[in-house]
Image 1 (cartoon, helix red, strand yellow):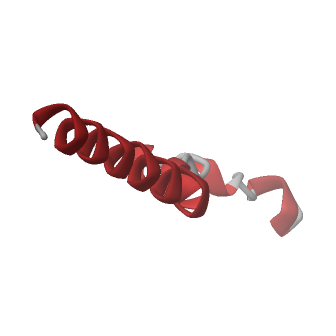
Image 2 (image 1 turned 180 degrees about the vertical axis):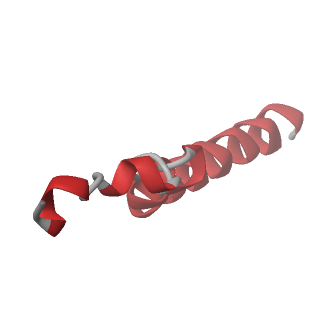
Length: 54
């Protein structure tokens, strides 16, 4: 009997599931786009409040 006949796949040895990115890792590439947009909206809202209150 050959040694390859008793070989089991790596998944049978308790290796973890394939890699699945979590929510934070999915959002991180969008930060350079989202952060300036949120900043611009915040500045617009603060300027609007300042003009409205004046």
